Length: 322
Length: 270
Image 1: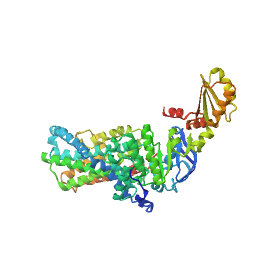
Image 2 (image 1 turned 90 degrees about the vertical axis):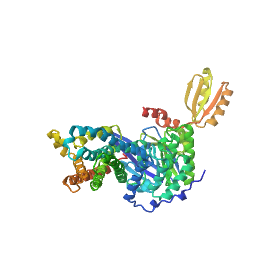
Image 3 (image 1 turned 120 degrees about the vertical axis):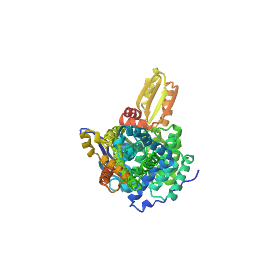
Image 4 (image 1 turned 45 degrees about the vertical axis):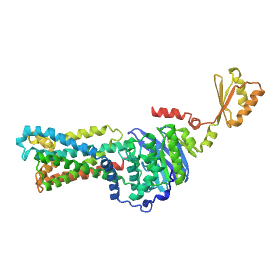
């Protein structure tokens, strides 16, 4: 569905400064995949998406989207794809129903077909009662659902979502995702989305592509990334006197590293947390080291990012935003 | 909840890759007019402003130089107000596009199969509609006050305004695209051009009484020719030299505006 080779994008800021926003991304997406592109602000996620959706031309490299080259045949690419940008697709001074209908006409439907399609989507995305409303009068969640509806009018086989749920509260995010996933099933859509929400990439995407400084630094399922790049974290409550002894025991566990203490808290990374914890507790009992409490933390994608870059994704976002 | 099926979506675009530019322009124009049609009162409200200007400035003009203007003050001033309405309305219209840049609607349309040039031409052509509406209202209100209407001249005069409005509207959109990343610049540039153009056209006050350099400067102002042409046309004189020069000025403005506008629109996604 998508195939890019050494895709790059430079922005010339001034005569002396050029920003290399995307530095040689090669990516293949198969039909039916749901891929999340994850990375901090300024990592090149949106720039990559804008190249794939023909909004901007690559500086070098090639990209084929839905069977057509983005540089040679952008018009054909546009007919095949749906795009939900960071902003609102529907004009704020227009009415909800008018914009949906108009979008259908843009894609070549006659007026009746466009009307039917608009009412289907209004119904499907719980916007039915809002057809006569002005877009500017909608709530954030309603507006975002309308954006998705606008992107789905022509039932594209490939849908791009640029930070679909940014700015929504958790309830609206969950609701939006319900709709997106249902639509995906009905249309057998391939979906590529960008996000800087870790939990979103984690729970929604079957494949996570981690991007940093314009390069792909990891590409796998969320589970595999976490197991391979982060490992589980064990946390124990042990009195300070016994912390050295528990450390000696813990270091024998497979993949044990990053031993940290803080007050009576002790933590470390292991390859397989659920299996390692009983072994450690057994050993502690055998050697008479009292453990007051124990927990296994499954890693997050933030841990993956930290492992890959040495920076926390949250810190990176904060810095970029500041 | 109803089930959505892709089977209801029949897209002719997949089989017919050649879209017509004409159809795209019509779609863009229809979309631009939708909010106006849905809320005609907003348009009506915008039309009151030229009337206020006429009501307040007209009497002053009549008092200070009524005697020196042939054909009465209204005959001299109403055509100029029509040009002024066109000037203000179409030069500000880029702000609508600027708003669509900010909200994301323009970006959405850039990813649809609509041709880039239709996004500019459709918008520029729609400028004719509020312009006609305003002109008709101004004329209708002024006739009872002694404004003498020559229908043939008025029709040609409106066509002339439309051509100029399309051109100036295109420039306004081009400006909006050019300054989209520093949107406050839009009004700075618009105002900077607006007032010299207006005053150096002899629209509000005759330039004959002004200094020589102003009269020379006005020769380089396309708006001067437009104002002269409109005054000639609304005096009922269709076949006269100033009308020809007015059309030259309007058509050159339209051609330049559309060229610059389309070129800018092609790069509007960067």
